[in-house]
Image (tube, rainbow, N blue to C red; front, top):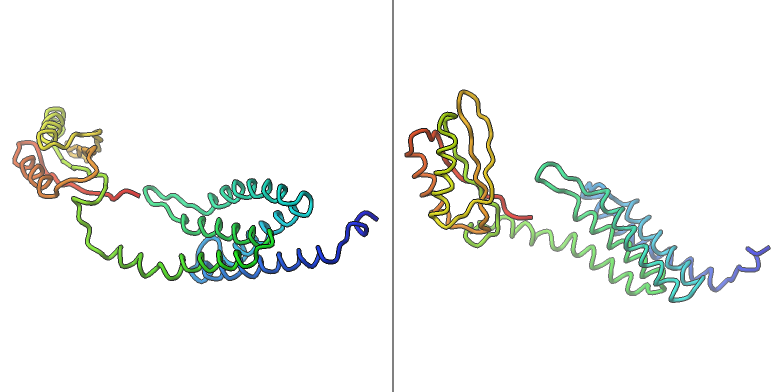
Length: 238
C-alpha cells in the first residue's frame, strides 16, 4: 500500500522526462563512440547517463537538493572506476583515455537531467560531441606538424653498443661525455646483445636537448675503440 500512497503523478511525470532526456542524450553521445568502434559505445554511454539521472532524481525526491548533492559525490567517484575499466595499457602505449572521459561526460549529462536541468544537459551533450568530433581535425593537424626537439619535452636515450670486455670503462666514458655536454644521466640500462656485445642505454634527465649536440656526442663515441654503434632516440612525454 505504501507504493500506492507514495505515487505522485506530477513527480512521476517529472522523473519520466528526466530519464527520457538522459537516455536520449546518452544515446547521442554513445552513437559517436560506437561509430568510432570504441570500447564503450552506444549502450554504455546511454546507460551511464540514464543511471546518473536516476540516482540524482531519486536523491532529490527523497531529500531535496541536499540528497542530490550527496548522490552526485558518489556518482563522480563511481564513474571514475567505470572509466578506468576502458583504459588499456600496452607497454608504453595507453589507449581508452578519451573514451573514459566521454563516459564521465555522459554521467554529468545524465546528472544535469536528473537534477531537472534539461537545458544544461543538452548543452553538456553538445559540448561532449563537439570535443569528440569537431576537435578531431585539429588533433590531426597538430600531430602532422613537425616536432622541434629543442622545444618538446621528451625522454631522451643515448644507445651505445660496446664490446663486453670494455663495458665498464665505456660506461664511465659515456657518462663523462654526456655530462661534459651538460646532459646529466638519470640512469643507464644494459641489454645483452650476444656475441660479446652489450647495449648501454643512457637515459637523460633533461627534458629538451639540442639534436646537433647529441649527434656530436654519438659521433665522438663511435670513434672510440670498443664502440660498435652509437645513436639516440626521443620519446615525447604523455
